[in-house]
Image (cartoon, rainbow, N blue to C red):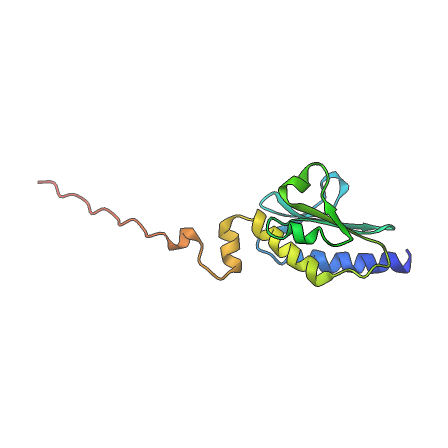
Length: 142
């Protein structure tokens, strides 16, 4: 493995660990690609090989700004129309990890159920704040 590939793998590991900190996030490998999912929905594609690091996230608020960067383009397979942005970095490129972490956060919030996003914001979920139905008192037999 080359020095550049080591750098790409290290960056991939940092992004992977960051994404897996989110509530109910887990790793999967459909099509042989590394993805991070929440409730069976992908919120991050991330992988590296000898060519470098590839990354993709759904950015409904910031996709237009994200596409200004020279390392980004709309994601393929029609996903770009829905705000998915792909980023590619060569093995020796400097990867803007903090920016990609912001994108992971935006993507998670766009994909995850509202209950899980509420956990991130320290808010009780909607179910927890619903008023409980009062138990009915038994009717007297008269």
